[in-house]
Structures are given as structure tokens and as C-alpha cells.
Length: 285
Image 1 (cartoon, one colour):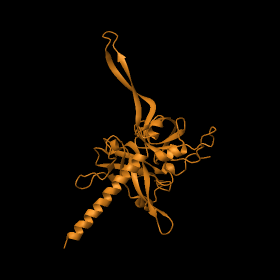
Image 2 (cartoon, rainbow, N blue to C red; image 1 turned 180 degrees about the horizontal axis):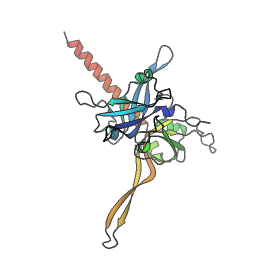
Image 3 (cartoon, rainbow, N blue to C red; image 1 turned 180 degrees about the vertical axis):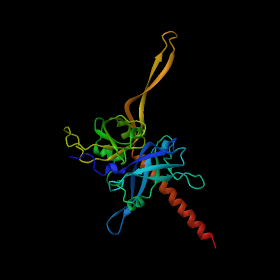
Image 4 (cartoon, rainbow, N blue to C red; image 1 turned 90 degrees about the horizontal axis):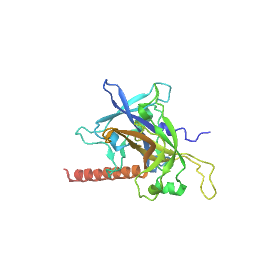
């Protein structure tokens, strides 16, 4: 019995940089997100595919490396993704609110398919639950969730292997009324989990008067773990000498709404650029 659709891990991407010896240092997670565009004439659906991660992952980088598995049993293959164009301008797009730790960049999904990579993407009209959907599903504290990603750079051996950790929603009511841009889950996350997806867990059982959850949904993006500080005090001076920062076991998560907002802003910019280009071409002789 599967509680996570088998293709969900194929949506998760390991993100790396060059290490000190020109090897790879895997620093974060991301996921592929398909924004629904329209229905095709043949009845299929058209999606624009983005790589989604945290803003702080892309900042100060000019390129990043992605790791995908082939459909065969061959070793994982690496791809280079440029984050800046030839003029040094960013090719990626942050959420317009600097306090929201979300970034997106369009990705050539067709190329990955042509290379026979074992990849998939979350479809915005089928696999995603934004705040409105979470309210409709009656998601609340205590409901279970999964965190998918690559904590501590653990990407596997020759093949990419996503690590799935389970937890529960610890605090979400303020996010459900949009009073807080993040909610908390009771799940350990570590460096490397940043930018990874959070997925709801289906539950057939529910107490009377509440809804059971029949499907798994993409419900958020990991922002960071929540830390706490413990202070060591000198016995002689009675003053703080050392501050220890520890992982509390709670993690902050942005609702998927902020990914959708970043994509909408990007599409507006694309449309604006098209209009400006069309106007310039119209004036030329």
C-alpha cells in the first residue's frame, strides 16, 4: 500500500555547487512544478515547468548543478543550470516579497525527457493544495505530512535516492487565514532539505464531523528548521560564555501559494517583454 504516489520522488531534484576539489557539494533540494497553461487539441494538457527552491539557495550563485536518474539502471547524470545570463542578469525569479524564501526558474523538461531521465513534475491543477484547498480539505494540526529531499547532502550513491521523512502539522491555523506566511511541521529537517517539497499524507480514518484525506498533495516548500538557543553561563562571572544553537525538531514551511504567486509574476514579466519586443519590431523599418 503506497501513501505517496510513486512518481512524487521523481519530482524532487538535488541541487549542488562545486566543492573545494572541483567535486560536487550537494547543498539543497528543489522540485519540478508544472504550471497548467491550457488544454491541447489532442486532449492533453500543456504545462510550463519550473524548478522551485528557496531564494537563499540561488542567491550569490552563477550556476547550480542538478542530478537526475536515467530510466535505465545507469548512474545518475548531472546537468548544469545557469542562473545568470551573459550580461550577469538573473535568469531566476524570486517571490516579489523579500520575506518569502521562494525562487523559481523555467526548466527545459522536454530535454530531460529526450535524454530518457526518470523525471516528473507536480501538476498545479491535480497534485497541489494551496491555502484555499487546504481549507476545503480541512487540514489541521495533527494531520500527517512527509518531507522529501536530500538532507546533509545525502543524494545516494551512483543513483539519486530521495529521503522521505514523516511528521505532522504542528501549527497551521494562522497560515490558513493568511495571517502568517509560513506554518510549522513537527519533522526534523537539516541543511540540504531547504527548498524541498512537503506532501500531505492520505488518511482513510477520521473522527466524526471531519473529512478523511483520500489523496496526497503538494502542500508547501521547506524554508528552514526552527532553532533554539541554549546558553552556557560562567560559574565565576555569571555571564554568558557560549551560545549553543540546536535543531528544535520543528520546520518552517511556506504554503504553495507563494510558488504560484512567483510564477504568475514571472508570466506577467514574460508577457510584458513580448509586448515590448512586438512594439519595437513594429517601429523598425
